[in-house]
Structures are given as C-alpha cells and as structure tokens.
Image (tube, rainbow, N blue to C red; front, side, top):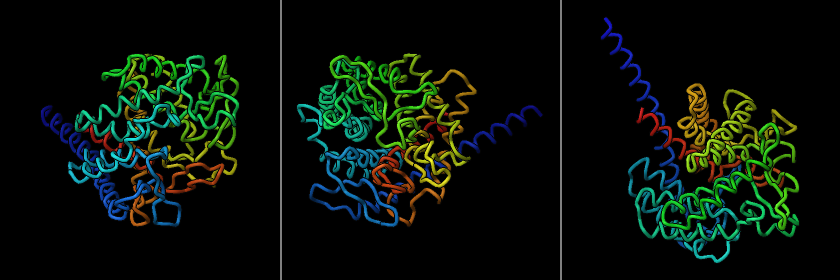
Length: 396
C-alpha cells in the first residue's frame, strides 16, 4: 500500500514537472517563430537594422543602430533562442548582430551607462554559450570603458554624461544596477579587480540613497559632483518624484538579486526581498502585470507594462533559489510563474498582431514614447525568464 502511494506521488510530481517544462518550451518555440518572422524582414545591410519597438496598431519595427541603449537586447534574445531550441540558425543570426556592437568596446570614455545592457546581454550570452575568446576580449574592454564613468567621491557610476549640465549634478538612475553585472563578471574573468569594488560600492550607495522609507525607488538620484552628497531623488520616466515607476522597481529587484549572487553580501539579499515585497504587495490584480506606474492617477485606466513584469519574473525566479526562508522561496517562485503564465496568454503575446514576442509595454510615458507598445527589452527578459523557469523545473 505504501509503495503504491509513493509511486502515485512520484507520478503526480513528474507529471507536474513535465507540464511546467512543456509550458516553458512551448512558449520558447513561440518566441522562435516570432523571431524568425522578424529576421525575414530586417534589412541585410545599413546601420539601422536592429529591432527596438513596434508602436501600437502598427506592424513595423522601429530600427536603431548600435549606439541605441536597446541595441544588445535583440542579439541577446537570439542567443537565448539558440540555447532554448538548439537551432544553429539563431546562433548565426546572433553573431551577425553582435558584430555591429563591436565599436562600443573601442570607446575611450563611455557615452553613458548602458554598456552593460548593450554588451553583457549580447556578448555575455554569446560567450557563456560558446566560450569564444574574442567575445571575452570585447567584454573585458567594455567593462573598462564603463568604469570611466565612476565617480569615487559619489560612489556611483554616472548614468547620463549628456545630462550633467541639465541637472547641474552627477546623476545615477536605478536602471544602472543591471549594468553592474558586466563589472562583476570582468573582475572575476581576468579583468581589473577594482571593477568588483566599483560595482559593489555603486550598489551599496544606491541602496542607501535611491529608496524611500517604504523601499520604493526613485528613478534618478542627483549627487553633488565634488562632495558626493545626495541632493535629491526625482523621476524621469515615472509619473512623479514620489511615485513607484514599475520598471524602475523591477530594475531594483533584478539588480540587487544579481548583486547578492555575485557578492554573497547578505545586505543585498535582504534588500532584494524588501524591494520585491513592496512591488508584489502593490500589484493591481491577479494577472500580476503592473500599470506603468503604481501610483498613476488614472488607475485602473492607464496602460500596463509587460516589460516590468518580464524583468520581475526573471528576477524572482532567481531570488527564489537564493533566499533561506522556504515560504519566501515558494512565494517568489509562484508569483514569477503566474507572471509568466499571464504574459504567455493571448492578452500579452503578440501572435499575429506583429512579429514581437509581447504586447503592452510602456517605454517613456511622460514624453509619450513607446506607449502600449511591443519593446525589445520586454521580449529579452521574457525569453530569459522562460529559460530560467525551464531549467529550474528540469533540476527538480
């Protein structure tokens, strides 16, 4: 009798795992079909051939060149598709678009902080999957370029050099947390060991100055360039200086989770949970897809932001493997799973509407940019989350 019960439990467990893996692979294959459609219509020459976004009620991609901050997400998504499908076609295409990003590693001084997004998402995934030594060289060079923006008086990397005159101050945005991964990686793979210290100090300074008492994030913090003292926190893409901009909070969740993985500093693990918990507590409904700003005045009518959900889902999956509290681990995993399930419905998948993976992301609401659109970074973090989910269930 006992043996029969054990076998029954084992059968149910395996069936549930198979179902989870099927869900992930089914949607990975969907993304592969969408990406193939995109590849078939992209220009084969010229500088503007990297997909960035598709506006609502249109079908054509807005194309950018390597200098755009979103330029690395496309080839990064292709590397993930190669990993998820084993189809060498996606490897070839990823390498094709990576070549266009090479000038980013050859700068003397960084134009802005987005080098991590541009190079770690693209070359980083490429090197992880191929161990191509030329990819490693590009990443090490780029990490050194990014470090030129570090201000030791402030303790953070300058995000927008072009905006220093406008703000009259050193500016750091919450998005910058993601770019620290390139510095951590470089310090551990033959690069300058000081890159680790820069990344860790940036994260600690951000943790101290970038958040309100309730653990919601400012988008931008301004610092006195000479003394390093915090001047104030403001928004740039959120509704107001005091509100929780959805994607900004998702960058915080992802960034501090990554920082704990790289440093094992328990402060980062505690903080990753704090910023995650306030995000989860504030979600509007069971879909777990946030409005573009949690405090937008026209709720429940403003557009959602699928990109924030995709970033958060990917981050929570990793966080669930790092926390010591089993209840918290189950909570983060289950919430991430639900986010992925919502994103994988016809409400959010692009399907026949356009060639992207997802609909309903919001880029820069205050200036009316990419509103309720398909945006490449939503697609990138969606496919990343699907792969993480698949791997976790295979390990189980």
